[in-house]
Amino acid sequence: METLKRHIPVSGPEDLREINRFALKFEGNFYASATSQSYYLREISSKMLKMWIESQSTLPNAPSNSVGNSSEDLGSIQVHELHRDFYLVLPEKKMTGKRARLPPSNQDERQNSVDYISQLPDAIILHIFSFMTTKDAIKTSVLSKRWRSTWTSNQYMNFSLPVHSSLKFKSFITFVDSVLLRCTAIKAKRFLFDAPCYALIQSSLDRWLQFAIEHGVEEVSVNLRYWRYKDFLLPRILFCCTTLVHLRVSKCCFWVFSTVNWCFLKTLRIDYAKLNDDGMMRVLSGSPVLEFLELKSCEGVKHIMVESKSFRELVIDSHKFCGQVSMLKISAPHLLKLRLLGNSRGGEFRLDEVSSLIEAELNFNMEICALDKVKAHADLVKGLLKRLHHVTKLVMGSWCLQALSLMEARDMFLPSLKCRHLILLGAAGHEGVPEAIAKIFESTQLLEKLFLQTTCTPNSAIELNADSVGRRVFAGEEFWNFVKWRIYQCLMHLRHVEIVDRGANLLAWEPVLSLLKFLLQNALWLDKIVINSTNSKSSQAFEPSPRLEVARILLSHPKCSPRAKVILRYPFQGCPSV
Image (cartoon, rainbow, N blue to C red; front, side, top):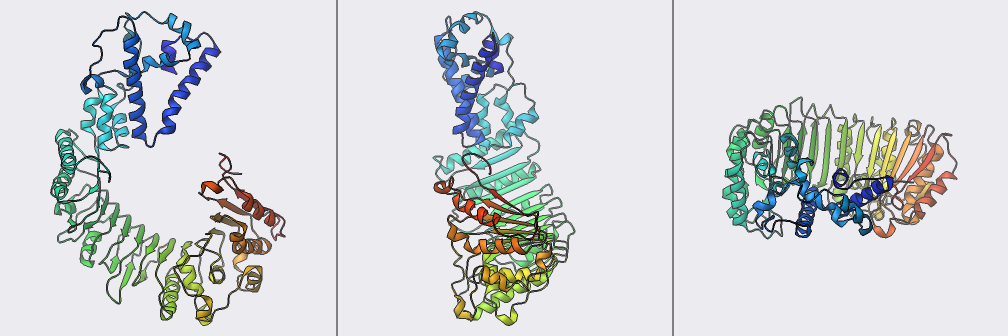
């Protein structure tokens, strides 16, 4: 708008609205088609440059060689020159007459225009670079002559080689080497590397990591894809980098044979790596201020013991157990949040010392392939709940709920839980899951907030049916009325219930609907039931009738609490919720 108004005099509100309409349309076309910030910046700059070149050929007295063909000539064009051609694509009826009031072509417009991009402080420019890959940051040099050399002082290095990239491995290596050679930054805040790791790249990666470490790097991420040979062995110099704050490595060999000195490391993520207890102990003891640790699809470690008072969150995702009898022991007396996720088959978890935990998530999956293992897996979940009895927020996945549902009657009582916020993920309609939910309700007498995430179809992780373990199947309101006496204490504090719906029809709602009707009729202090639909299927995106029917049923159902509300949140025709 400001650029257009400098070139086109505004005589009234109508002209201002027309300029605003055109500016919105021009900007909006590129924004709507952009897939990323760097793509948007590149495309709109290219379009502005093309328009300026075309305008030069139509302006009178324009010099024949005003624009060269080399990238050096294109990079010297100022931003106000790129903007100057906007008026050339205005509607003809508006362009006629407006152009007559433009200054003569022989007048230097640069005297009255301002190159805002070139006037940006270096700190702002470098902050913009932090959101881009290094390759895209270099491309921005076309925007301004000043930006041509600014990228060399970029402290955020991000090298990525996409899977289907046309760039050859040797060309990619040459590119990275040339960037690091021209780098003038005294300190490197970030070094991100994501590429297929073959022999050609492996020998160079050591050199690139050493460059980053020598420049006091704070964040390092190494993601190696499609590794067909032996694992990439991290250089020893990395374990002595005292400036590291955030580290993530994927598909690397993490054997540690020397002392680890990560005195400022706060977050550590290790994916698809081979570990051992000795190396893990060295890493944890050498990271005195570590706050977050994530191990994803790692194997070899059997004991995680952290005594640091700074340690706050531990994530174990798809742990790979080794050996016939394998166990992962966790001991962290100051840990606040624990998450056990993914497919973790062939072993079990044991919590030794987790007395400070306030939040826990049990959303892992172990295959049950024989009847003799049913009790063992149920005892595993029950044992974890016993060690987590003091947490105030508990998340349980579908597999854990199904494992509890297969417990025999004599083992059905769970330890007393102090949980106030309970999140249950999975298929509420799976055989036996209502019984597992009732067991949890019975043990949770202080529950205030309940969150349920449902699915259309039951999880097939457990293929055993109810008859195979001698368990009776209950369904619907009959079941909840039957267990009412067992879960009455839980209903005394419940105030907030939220359902995340992934079902598509009313039939899929039946198991959940019976529970909601029971809670509405028996929860003494219930404030609201929220139905939050997150169905992502485009064919069902504008069909809220099943949810509306559920809401209608609940609104007409008797309620124990006079202030209880039923709220339906559903994206409908562009609106966030209704």
